[in-house]
Image (cartoon, rainbow, N blue to C red):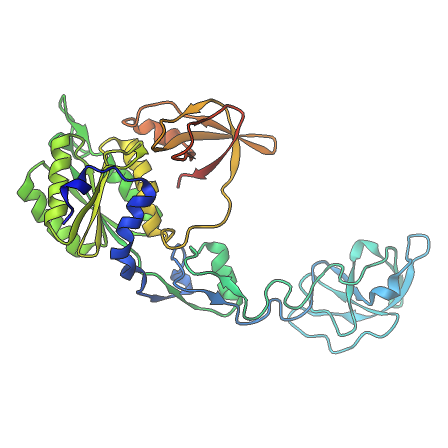
Length: 413
């Protein structure tokens, strides 16, 4: 179980994730095979290589005439190159004839070039003189207006690296390779529990001092958007035994358990006590060097991740995005290497040293550049997250950012 010295040591995000990681690596060792139709949003379990070259034949990118490029050299409108046409390429058929000198064949977009052809003249640059004789009014370079064999993909090259999230375009790529079954990580099961004496369901009218359950639904939406199978278990009062009963069930039924709310110190202490009592190794951190989100707690109960998130709605959403989402998209194992978009910040941002900060921002376009406008508002205000398009990360060692600087941002799902 977590020792008392651990409980009050605030961890950085990286430290918290690294502390948890050894206990849950087994979650990523299971693989499911799903049909291509059911693969959207799933995460590829291992590198997938191309099964064949794409395209596997040389194809035209325009409507026009397949030619030998050298037969068109020097052609102009005043002095067209003369080409004798030998029919037309049919879609889905391989042309039988090999092009000899001075011969061409009409071809549609996507049609297969005949042997001997190494360029396509666009239809706009052809004059029909009749009797199958055409004038080419603009010379074509070798390779012009065609896609060569293997230009899109070479056989054996990795087309989807391990831990890629499958989007519509990846589905198309897999289809192009004849891959109708895809190895993916299992969907994580995420259980969400709202806690606190003051929290009531959204269909009830709150009395003074009561609040409708916001976090249960924002976290549910975030988990589903990450591809998880998520379930909201409702609301439980700050009662140790009731919480113990429902948490025991949730830990049996889920891979990740999120406790939301419980803003008071007493409520957080209940959650921390239960995380530490329900299984090994128990509570692993009690507070993050993070703003918003310092009160976050977390641990492992018998290889299940469990987090206690802050009660403030915007704060809970930011914490989900920074410490829960990376498990769901496997970026804890394989940080995404693609660069984040960036834009120009409109205001000075100051951050206390020794903690990371995530600033909610709105985006607008200024010609070819993004303008990044911080949203002012307290972490208890859900409206600030509704208005936000993205988050800007201020690192541990950054005191602040000056207006006019370029900053990287991550879009909020």
